[in-house]
Image (cartoon, rainbow, N blue to C red; front, top):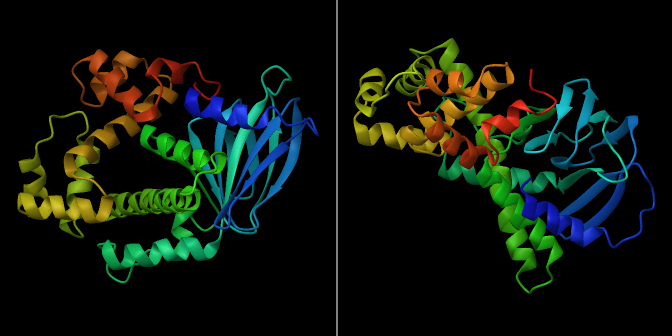
Length: 310
């Protein structure tokens, strides 16, 4: 999370008494959802968490290690973790301390709300795959869903948190719109990963698959829209329409997103910022660092210093 969001949530709940040192909970309720902020002030292991509804989790500060039947790994700031109803995990807090607690927010979302968003997407942005529709399980891969935040998602989370903290007349409206956008982002991200897997497995199945596959195998090259049109056997207008409908963005924006996603993976694999810059198709390290920071909210160098970096 960005520093302004951390300050807002901190100011909102630090004045309240600390009732427990592990997972001290502050709750902000609305009729559409429930926001909780959890602070842990001492190291702990195997603290249980169970999702009654769809549960969206976002790290604010510190580090957790999650253990579950469908996910086992670290959970760090600038990441999202979504649990399906009935899913259980246990949590380790290896770095929690009274002076710098591990802090996380959760947003409980009713299943009816997720179905409502799926119905909207099926009407207005159907998946370009035969006999395949947006479904609630796509928001969390049936069990759990772990992704990195982009800066735009960070700003969205800030709006959602602010809607709980403020008491203006439009609070419920802002919250409802924010949750709808967050769920749409969740579904689109998982739907996009599904399309990417399909493109890898069957790149000749259709024109969109061909274009997606070509992008992923040529991220280090100077990709031109005309090249994608040839691969997809589409006109420029048809190509843009297909990308917008299936992926929520145009082909140029998608290329930049995929380059930055690959860059993050390469950085976590231990490669230097300069190596990664050129490998994903940038010609200027300074430009690469600027785009990376705009997308993820932190510099490539900051990622290398994280505990999960190799």
